[in-house]
Length: 291
Image 1 (cartoon, one colour):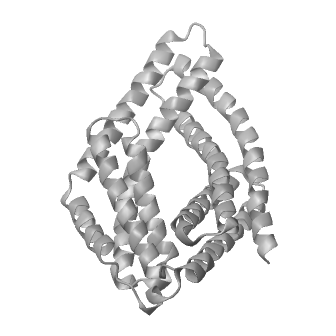
Image 2: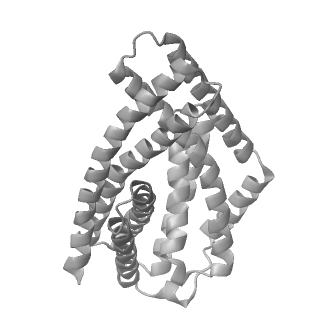
Image 3: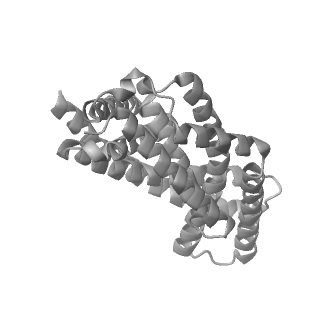
């Protein structure tokens, strides 16, 4: 039976390789490169967080902080991509008539945002700070700074950490259900989504020693994060459209178009909010079953 430390070592090595592959894809201009890079970074951060008790935090906490810095900057670029995808779908559904100039102007503005976001990604990955992050990551992945707990049974400890992360998700679900304010609930649902991702990745890392329950937790967490992810993407899109509509230089036709698209996205958002809240029940049932 593998030790807890060997599970961590295997997970970090796998995701360090995944990060390198994603970097190559991004530099080659492949469309999924940015997404894959962000996923690899999230999985590494999640592993360092979930298995924190068996790691020397003086080494791994600074790495988590630096990976978060990278993730935030890359996330902004991904948000622009999402907004463009959603806006194009809204335009296709709305079929605006007599607003060609406004539509062209909106697309041009979003392309500028995408170019600017792409520049940030390039600058980030070319920076000395990012190079230092990779050097630190390479050291941790090659020789994880394990505590005495790293020698314990991987099966018992990994399952315990997955259950801990499940309780962490459920606590955030309680907070999301505790408010009826749409904006506040959107923010709390996003917190649930992030916690569900960490739970899913913890279950993935436990796969070598996992039983049926851990596999079920992984599947439900993935489904939940996907549904709430649609809600988050719609939230980001609507916020961008509303921001653009407030631009005094946008013109009357553009303001009308943006207002129409905002109203359409608001209707989509209400449906996704209901679906997101319904999706939380499965994780709550898993937690209650364990208790």
